[in-house]
Length: 394
Ligand SMILES: Nc1ncnc2c1ncn2[C@@H]1O[C@H](COP(=O)(O)OP(=O)(O)OP(=O)(O)O)[C@@H](O)[C@H]1O
Ligand SMILES: [Mg+2]
Image (cartoon, rainbow, N blue to C red; front, side, top):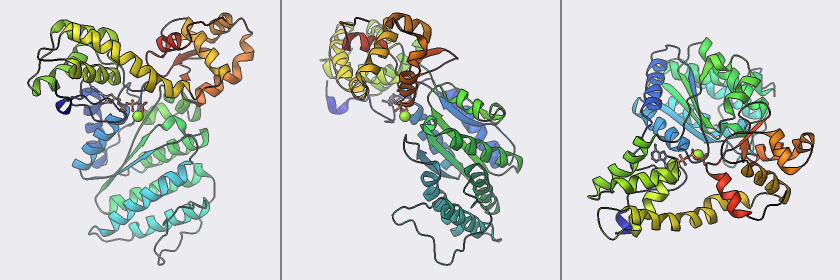
C-alpha cells in the first residue's frame, strides 16, 4: 500500500500515531503539573524503561501538557560526556529572560539572573554566544562555591522564586538521566529537595534506563520520597493491537486479527518494534485487510533491518571482549541473569568480569536490576546476539 500514507513511525523519539497504554503515566503527570502550579507538594517523576519503549515520546508529551498549563518548559538530554551545569545553564537563562518579559513587580527575576550568572562563572561555562546582559552583576556568594551540590539547589530556588514572583511555573524535562555522574545526580536530587521545602513552582520530569531508581537511591536515601519512578514497559497485547489498529483504521485500512496476533507475538509489545512491524506490514500489503501472511513477509524484512541498524549500531561500539561477555549472557536466554552464571558460561572467575561489566553498564548496554544481576537494556538483544555470533564457543 501507499508508503506515503503509511501511518507508522519507527524511530527515536518520533511520536507514534497512537500513544497506546500510557494514560496512567500521563494522568500522573497532569496531577503533578496541576498541584505544583497550585503550590501543593507532589513527587517529581523519573520515568524508567529499556531502549525503545517510548520514554522520549512521553517526555515530549508531558512537555506539551506543561506548556498547555502555561509552564515554561526546559528540555535537555544528558550525554556521556557533558556536564550538568553547562547543559542546564543556557535553558535556565532563556526561562529567566522569558519571565523577565512578563508583567509583575519585584526583583526576583533579576536576582535569578544574577544567581545564574554567578553559577555560570563558578563553572566557567564556555559556550558560544552565552553572554549575559552587561547590566547583570553576579550574585556574589550564591551558587558560586564550585560545589554543584551546594550551587545547583541555590540556582533552582532562585529560578523557582522568580517563577513564583511572576505567578508562573517551570518544568524541567531531562532525558537520559542515567548519564549524569553521581555528584550531578546528587545535586539534582538536592535541588528538588530544596524546591519542595520552599514549595516553589518547579517540576522535574526525567527519563532514563531502569538503573535509575537504584542510582538515585544510592545517591540520596530520601530520593524515593521526592520522586516516583513510573515504569515505561512493553505494551499489553490489547494496547499493542490498539497501537496498530487505530492508526490503520483512521487511514481506512484493517488488520486481520491473526495478523495482529502475529505482530504481538514477535514484538512482545515493545513500542519501537510495534512501529517497525506496522510500518513494514503496511508497505508490503497490496490491499486491506493486512493478512497474517503479509506480516510473515514483513518479519522476514524487519529482522535483517533491525540487525543492520537498531542492533548493529550498538554492536559495533563494542570491543571483542565486551561482545563475548554479552554473547555469554545471551546464551542464558532472555531476562535477568546472575553474573556468576555468566562467568560459568565463560569458564572464568566472577571477579575477573568486574571491569567489562562496568564498561558495558557505562555504555548503556546492560544494567543491574539487583545486586549481582545483569540484563540487557535493549529488548530482544539476546536473540540478536545469537544471530550475530552463531558460532560462539566460550
Ligand atoms: N505508547 C506507544 N505506542 C506505540 N508506539 C510507541 C509508543 N511510545 C513510543 N512508541 C514508538 O516507539 C519508538 C521509540 O520511542 P522513543 O524514542 O520515545 O523510545 P525511548 O524509550 O526514548 O528509547 P531510547 O531509550 O532508545 O531513547 C518510536 O518509534 C515511537 O513512535
Ligand atoms: Mg529516548
